Image 1 (tube, helix red, strand yellow):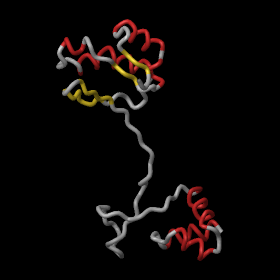
Image 2 (spheres, one colour):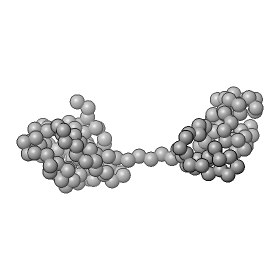
Image 3 (tube, rainbow, N blue to C red):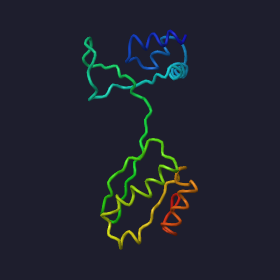
Image 4 (cartoon, rainbow, N blue to C red):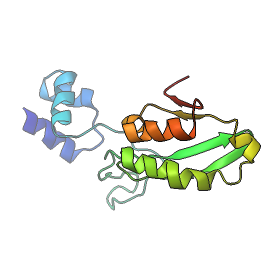
Length: 152
């Protein structure tokens, strides 16, 4: 049954899961389950996609369109000043975050007046790197009472 479903999908990319279910005489849930097991996901062609098919210039077959990716970004706003985004290493750990606090953050804050810097808070979002002992010790020593480890 699964092979039949996959054959239909290979032959006609635009067939809806409901139509496949009716054709193969199974539930739509079965079609979804079989597609998910093969890491296939129904999609709708969107305007703006690159045209690649020569037989049908209105269709395209996306390649790896649902790969997972993530990015860490640090940015800040102090009063009406935007602190430009910083892209830390992909795998943020306690030692990388400590380097950020010791070396990168002071550079990013150099345009903020000292009077403002002395009154501002630094709030963490609760990522594991923020709670490493070396990071907490640094924060306590340098931002005594003016930092938060999670939502306020």
